[in-house]
Image (tube, rainbow, N blue to C red; front, top):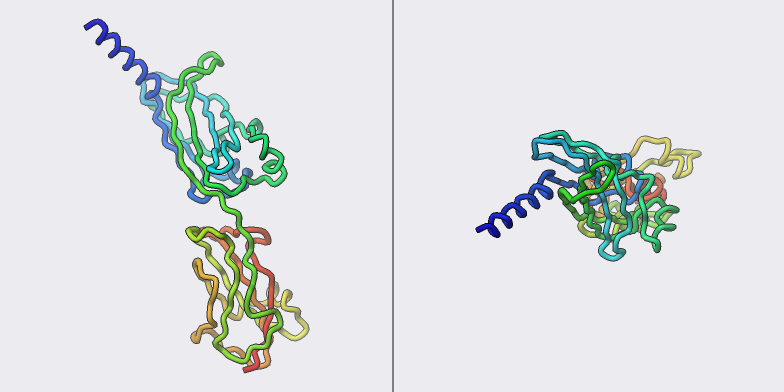
Length: 268
């Protein structure tokens, strides 16, 4: 009986040490690859902590980013802070760790620092919550983890029509390469077409003129010029390009997610 009570007491103490803080981590499914975004934006990572006990506790967070192919690529500690009794606090990404002291995997350190990016991979973000007493690290109070995917994006590359091509049919395809190799990521393609006026280059027309026709397509890399689109004028030159964004309208890849500008002549 004494042994049973002792075991029960030890279990209770262990639960108290590991159960004093409830932890819930939220990570964007497809976050930015740029660490500067992780540091500054509050929509990439957030952590909700709840002190379920009736006494305050001072804690530090230990965060790790672990890749499926690359292993642990980065880790870091937060500064200590106190959770009051019963307090619920949301910790945003800018205070999740002391970003100036983050350490990186030795094999990837130079690459990450020079590019400011995490390499493409499926990652697990793991957070441990530790008690701190008189500056000394104590027991773990809670933990949580979530997975996310870092993708590398490239601006769409135009395929058809060829630059300067003369088209003799109204039913022509506008085609471009995908901004990502991941078929599960929802890319929004913004197709814009412009009339090239006398004295203009196609690039100038795309920068200065109002779009003659524009269309947004989701995860679609080809569009046959629709019959309900504006009629094309025979003998007219048209410029066009495609911009890739995510569902929030944020550009994907360099050059604000924009392809090169091409032009074609319509001679039907």
